[in-house]
Length: 295
Image (tube, rainbow, N blue to C red; front, side, top):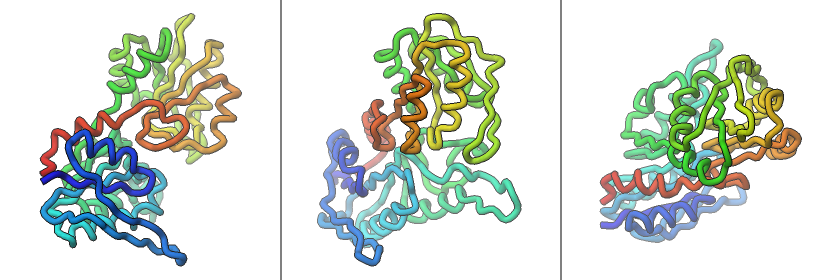
């Protein structure tokens, strides 16, 4: 039987494209909020005997989580033989250890909650820092896709004479791979995170060649602190307008204004919807889904 795709609010376009790409159906549903703030879920198509696939990018996850698991539980109760989750952006990977006594290791807690509601997970470039893979905290099959080749293709088509720059030493391998994919040179900065919104950037090991376009690569942009500090250092070496690329765009609303002062253009993938989401990763998700047994 064809897989049945259910979009959480804001994910309708991606769910429709994915369903079309793998020969599935889009599930008619009603998801809304009662006046008291509680969630209302209604599945209008029959999922009995079918693979159900929920599509939900998990930026700002707290408001999305309960509707997500309510929908998954309902699909299972109505007879779906398996329920999978496509989460282009996977939340709660930041707190991957107990930095101070008494802190919640929310990455493990969130992984346990998702694992109890779904049979598998498909995501793009989760923020793995102290974990080597999602399998360390998730008890369900996790299928991780990498946007590097898609980003390299976008750079090759849209940026003249790119020179790629990683924000820290940990990004070197990834930046080198993207640079190879678009035929560019690269370098890396050194970053020391001082707090949620404070970093120190060391550019002493970076040499930007003349007449290139600096392209700063990062997996996530949120507060924008890293981008702004990095651009301040890049500006010491070149006045060529720069591009900042992030796979997942969680940027503060006022980041555009601050970046404009540095002459920097921000571009992200559409793993999270937004005004900067110019790099399309839905075909990447579709290719990942096509490799799964969805019947």
